[in-house]
Length: 373
Length: 152
Picture (cartoon, rainbow over the protein chains, first blue to last red):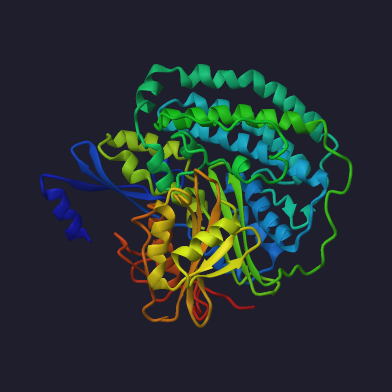
């Protein structure tokens, strides 16, 4: 290995460096082996698996309600959405219709998770590109969402609020008022994000025309979520295969066609506005009723294959369960949006400067535990 | 296209394909030697245009190994599941679909790493998560690891 690296450095053409696993801009333990020619990136090889925990293998030994607690720990920034994906798969397999109240609350909390996730992405992305102030702005507002979560679900980062059959417990009496207060507050402060970063000349120079990927390539690479929509790929599962309340609320699928880092940035900012629009339509109309359906103490899925798509904050998150009729799945697969989005990084960063690699990997919004599972 | 139309179309392309009605999608089972050709036609035909690979899953069925392909069309928004199995557990080999969908690259590496299914014509088939000198494939049902897996 040492000899091999030595050889690549000695040749005048290209040399290889390691970026990560402990690099602040990889947002976790991810290692890029970068081939450089001068300052230009010629090839990027990501190395995954530093926090591979074998979640899929573990799930084969535990019951469906227990799986919920492991899905939280994959993509911890959209933990609630991952929970809902597993719950929906189980509920659809058993053909149990959820009460309206559950659908409303799940949708609202999912959208709050999405806002919180995009806020954290925004502040980390700003910091990656040298704007440290962003971090304080983003975390200041995210704290308010985490407080709402804490009151109703008991958890801030990892909530485990969904369970097959509904919710773990009912929402806190203050929930509606606090969400309404937050929306009112956030509508006022979200333009600050634009004032601080979007219009900034240094930021624009670093993001515009960096990491371009065309629509055809984005589809071919399976680039989903805001990263795919920045290239014009209409991949929003909320629109394409609606679940919860998404088929009944009015919102716009944010699409940009530029396909560069700035487009992916703008999609996320606009999505925060759309999420607020969804929450506002639902928050006043949460119907009364049960917050959970009574399920059998031991949940067994009938023999067969079950597939569920949901839109997490980073892209399409799929759960695929193969059941042999037992209380634990025969095989469970989680389609991680991060792992698939990472496939495109080599094509995106070709012939860009190494500093742009930070901007490109930041614009993909990678969460490593979801990638490694 | 509706599921019925897709079924008709696929039977016309490959009369030996076994088609099962799943919960939402059709599951088309074909031998591993015919999978690539079917996938290529489904991707390139105008009326099916399956250009987006949602998910690729490997399964160990104890006697044989299987691979599932969940594919979707960004234009028509219809989905279908392709399935293939291989009875050879020692040298399981399936054609790679990387040349059709580039998103298969890491999916296939992951399946190779955890289940030991080789993909023919994959550009860079290495282990994805585990070390290169790791022995065995953990997602197989007969995998034994007395140190790291605690049985209760």
